[in-house]
Image 1 (tube, rainbow, N blue to C red):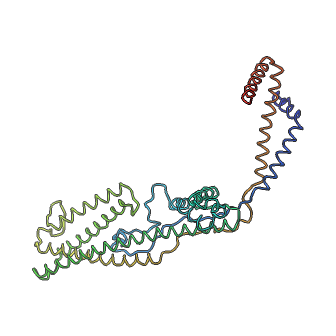
Image 2 (image 1 turned 180 degrees about the horizontal axis):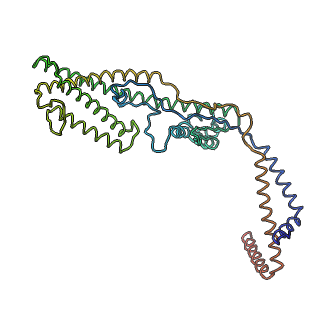
Image 3 (image 1 turned 90 degrees about the vertical axis):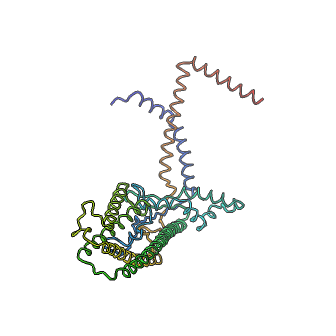
Length: 411
């Protein structure tokens, strides 16, 4: 196989400067090896947290409508209305990378003292904290893996200090998560208590109306037609409450859902409201069939049916909200950690930095490239002097003039 002219020139230049190449490599690699052994060792501790799950607590239900939906209270996760393609793991990573968590970690682990920043910035602690935060972010990372796990890495000069910082970060994450969840539970309980007060007030009003009705008309034994009307009204009112609360919860971000779902629920609620008003007013328009028909029922029976269904719904709603308040109090008092650690922080066993072999290979390759460029550039320069002396003399004269300019400035 005949060697190409470029390869021949390349080999010729290398062999011609073989001693120079060996000396350069010997000096550079000796310095590199010495520096890599002087560099301080660093230890990386890796912690893996399982993907957080929604905290779904068992709740009571009433006619297919959960008590949480009656109260506008929905269990789940940290109470966020997450954007599209966002998971709770992404939320946790944002908390882990937040300035609040990092500052708390720095101040509670003595990280500033480990960098000797307290003495340097004793009169300005904010600058010390800023410098410590910059250094901390360089050796800290919190990411979501491709499988949805949360990976936490902390690197310091001491393995046990890395373990301590990792444990502190996990505890702070759990503390922040617990405080957010507790705040959500407390807000939900207060909302439920307000709705309970409204429901009890409505129940008292309905009860008073029932008493006045019985004083005026006496006790009425419902007929078969009236029972049918009351059943229809009770079912429609229950469905109306369920649909209205569901649409309001989605619109206010308490529960996830799309705009199309909101519009559909609101349209259904409006249709139910009109049907209820139609039945309660005694109007038979719209083609609604209720057995014997409302036109055949006396007005007193229609009023009694309205009051009775309102009373039953308010009574059930009040009882449901009372149970929901008790459940919210229990959840608030017995909140537990939702973090599940797959790989807890532990001694790494071996340093992570510096990776001496990688550094040696990188320096060797970089030196090879620089030497090749330098030798071929010098060889080309020499050829230019021989092959084209006129061009070389022109550049040589220019260089001499430039040197004279610098000498004049020095004088």
